[in-house]
Image (cartoon, rainbow, N blue to C red; front, side):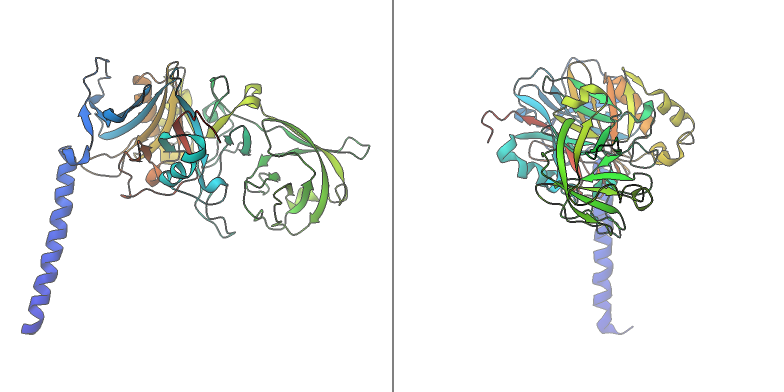
Length: 442
């Protein structure tokens, strides 16, 4: 090596050493719960009895709390930091709300972006957690698409067919994973079904069952309605599609409207009109209907969500697995934890410790939750069973699991409150939110 190259090598080694020192320092500070990572945090002096599994509880930004709102961090004895935004259900100035990323199904958005966009018309957001599962992208041009239920301002934006696979709700009590709020303030947690029917006005009893709204149309979900909330086109391939117009929008949980077919497309990927919807049927089933539904065919579309209370839900959001029921860990989750994921192979990732997000409630309080993970020396995360057990210890009566991993984010009081696994806020599909009521809605 020449003398001229030695200074460059020394500088390179020095930079590498400084980087390693910085990484070590960050880990050491986190391990010691350094105040740098607890901005606006003070140790809780509350007289509430905490579970034995809690080492300490911090109050975060308590000087900015609205009446009926709290932002807390629990240090779980198993090695995880759990961030919880709480809403008093009796607080007249607060409400539960949801927000759809980019105001449509396709695409993703950060919670920060979604709350900023909705602030002007919907009221001041206080906290939000990432919600539904979905795909980040695929080879059909879906740059993000949720798999779960979403009801916003009474509009039925999305509802899937119940399927036992990743991201979906298994058709069992464990899969009762949609949370909804009625205009009267009732909290609901159930497996929700669409019960959609398309009836053709041709003098016969021809009725087509609708499986889903704004979901992927394939052999497992053969009949899907696409509304303007989905995006510009359906992005299907080879589906037989019918454009329905002269129809009432938006769709709701209890719905009935007449329609007229104005276009038939046997190739799929139809343009979704702003004043209509597209009915997509997968190719094999479409053979039974292509001669019955033609241009100018008229009929009636009906929807009646079940359980019946869901027909009146104002805001609703879905996850994929139920964690707590009536204050106890869900029985199927107990079996899942004991078998280390063997009892539900498709969801086996839930038996490992990862960052998690969830929603829970009891008779008095709503909880939006993020568990940090994948950060040695600070927080490693939780399994679903550990999370359900901990929630039950905190007095949460019902809880469901939301999308987790690097998406796990709790935004509160103007900024991200937790420490996402990748070190930055990831774009997500929708948001479960606590919001101050808008006294002067637009």
